[in-house]
Amino acid sequence: MREVKASAYHRVLEIAGFGDTAEHEIKIYAVSRAEQLSTPVTVKVKPLEPPVMSVFGSLAMKEDFGGATFTVYQRCGGRCQYRRTYEECRRRMGG
View 1: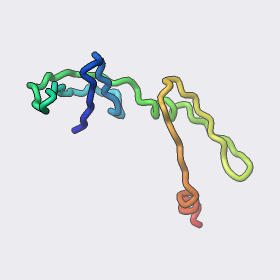
View 2 (view 1 turned 90 degrees about the horizontal axis):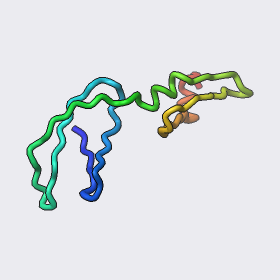
View 3 (view 1 turned 45 degrees about the vertical axis):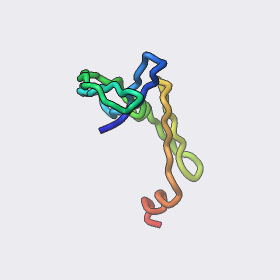
View 4 (view 1 turned 90 degrees about the vertical axis):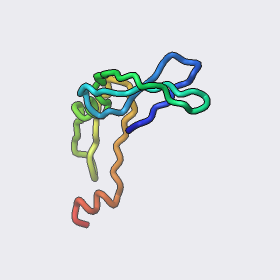
């Protein structure tokens, strides 16, 4: 179960982070200032492609001095980050 909060002053509720493009059924509750829940409204949503999937599809790697250079094309404007620690590299290389 995931919780997303919205402001009483805005008419927008952003629900993100599904990780796929499959249809999902979600329940939306209104919560009073006294923390009383309303009866849920069930809604079906079909998320857009996650940014990591579009970035992964465009990933290109080429040999570089002492390592590799990675190039990606990010169409959606979402934030993606790639990290590889020194310890992870040593483990993979058997060092």
